[in-house]
View 1 (cartoon, helix red, strand yellow):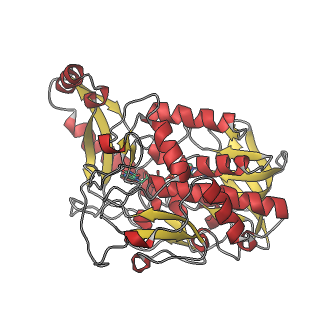
View 2 (cartoon, rainbow, N blue to C red; view 1 turned 90 degrees about the horizontal axis):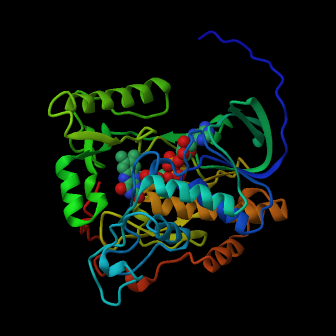
View 3 (cartoon, rainbow, N blue to C red; view 1 turned 90 degrees about the vertical axis):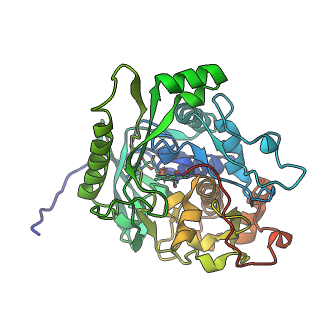
Length: 421
Ligand SMILES: Cc1cc2nc3c(=O)[nH]c(=O)nc-3n(C[C@H](O)[C@H](O)[C@H](O)COP(=O)(O)OP(=O)(O)OC[C@H]3O[C@@H](n4cnc5c(N)ncnc54)[C@H](O)[C@@H]3O)c2cc1C
């Protein structure tokens, strides 16, 4: 491949203590958590014009279960705070058992909810402003400047042109580990099935919504690619997608939308409308960092000394995990930390780790860890774990799950229907 060398002078902007790349739920949690723990200058950079990432812009408006399938809540902290926020002004699908918090009696009803993606997105933006996070929308983190594995700052590309933003620490919440990758750190790619979910309103669904006085029933899911989480219904003639090249992303989005377009070439055009489409590609697992530790399925029911929060399997009852701080960092890169989808997990453990509630938990932990690092001018792997755990516990995170919740049959694979995905 031939290359050219590009040399240009670009303005240097003010320095931030912390820049968060990516305004999905993980990035929001990181930014807010850092501010709440006293970090003064925090900037969040988002390439779209919406806050929330897949959870809003990507139309994945569903908190997977934050409980063990027996009526015990496992995921707390900012995940619970944001779940409650998400249904403050818009519709919900919270089971009655969980409307007022943890049920008194055991139940298989799970702690889940749907929410309005757009209202929630606006609320997240408001939260960032209220917490004193500086925000740049429609701004792409285009490059990093690295010296000896220390990222000196980020090159942002926006309507203002290219500008350099120096930063002491950076949270990679891009969902794709863009920052680690560009800093030269090792990353691991995932694979994605042919999936595309949008929503339609039609005369029947509107009638149903009207008669039931429930507006969410006006929206019904429609699909381009039909594949599910486990690859079921992935068309035989389709490749798997990584989502880490422009060609791959373009083909994925284009081919999916063409499947959906076929649906609208038939039928009465006055009786239905494609009401919501995702404005970012719905890739589950693109790229995560190669961290000091990678969460595995064998880590079920394992306590980690450096846990930053307990999480549960969203698809099976009982299965509990803890997220080790080491899954968010690569000690060779002393001022970078990952949050959300780019935290390191293997196989289905990555799936358990990347969904909305755990993504918020790792974001919250990343923000708090950066607060400790900023105040002590520390490398990210030198953050005092007990101090971090104490801070998170005060912020309502459950660091270690209770051993009484571990079932006698540790190998049980009981699925619990969550009515979605
Ligand atoms: C098909 C599908 C179904 C799913 N179903 C569920 C479900 O039912 N429930 C559930 O809980 N989870 C589900 N998930 C997973 C969940 O939605 C995501 O894993 C989670 O929202 C990830 O949050 P995040 O903040 O880590 O990343 P993202 O939501 O990906 O956010 C990353 C943000 O960074 C921005 N960004 C990226 N690169 C740059 C850059 N270079 N510069 C600036 N900004 C950048 C993006 O625009 C985006 O806003 C599903 C995912 C998919 C794809």
